[in-house]
Image (cartoon, rainbow, N blue to C red; front, top):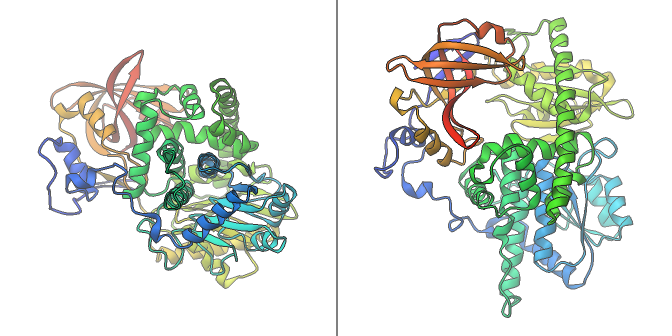
Length: 577
């Protein structure tokens, strides 16, 4: 089935292979979902840790481990330098907890204030580390672009290990060791590890080396699986592709959370988000826990989020979680105001979803909050289906931008195109295929806007981007039930590049009402059997337009709605055709 509405295209996925060796007890709808994602046998459904690839193929990991062991044996200080997002916070917590489990007595951390120091191991942060008499700096989720900061720290006698997962620049920092699966020549089979996954692998290698040295003859080796609840949170929150390795890490972390074997901070954040431990899934980490953790780095100090993950005190964890919850509410309010500002700018610029002259969109307001521009860029990107960069005022005549991209456009490489042709334009930039950050002089913003538009147009080969929903077909009326909804939830973990199942169907609308000014609740009936179903559509730009229709074709996810201990199936609407 191919359907089109405005600039939205709905394509039904085709199985990546006709081979089907899945067991006969897999539900037909779930079987179709798996085949559409290239899962053809039960072995590929194995999400245990048994077949995690070894750390051996990670470049630089032996050197990193030797440096850490030497520092621990000499009773010297290790300082973790973290990023200020959820991946950075979880990477930091895993590093601190893991190193302490493995015998380090002097481990501390610092996370840059994004409003003062910016991102990564800058010379200013290196100076902070030196003031704390650090002997070894380990960066987590950053550092691959920190050429000056690494050089400064090493020149002052401090050793530096960079652990990162971001795409490396042409020139690498001259660190004592670098562990990053994205490095040229690195043989690790997964290039999708989040920063927290890279640090987890460093700890696995460290424990293995200790085992070979006879460290655990008299006592059992620490169980690093105890860190997987935090690893799962960071991996999902950073929206990295859920390849085989990441699905194993996330699934095992989720199992620990569901069994209540998680740190008090995650337990507290889930409670405040009104999620039950036993029914926590990857979407809860992405949409409930992650944003609350991220709020600290966006509006305040990510140390608050890190402390939430480090404390073993239940009451302390709840106190911090409550602060994070309040920060997240404040972030939502700021975001809403900024979104209204952005809509006004789009109106003035006459930019719409159907505007074929506008390939990449740059938005700026000197009152916008630096910590929220990433979310704003994401929201506008979803509205326009165009790559978007939102800018906020910084210091010294500069602006900082946060970019979000669409499928088919590598945003970091697009920025690199501009940097190659105009070397003085971008002061700093870095990121992934789908997200990036940068800084430039405010006076260059107008020129950069034109350059970005042209660079995107060239990358897209002058072909208008379509907002494509890849769906897994229709579900027979009788299968739209709680049993299938539960099977689909448990069939994950779902996430980036292993997308949650999405379906299409036409329904009779018995009632539609607006909730909270921007959500729409539907009472539906299936067309053939007349079965009654509930559906909810969140964050609709024009909810009035959906009220009063007798029949609708919906793109939706099958969800479980639990209220007062009672569960029933619910359609989560993603688009109305």
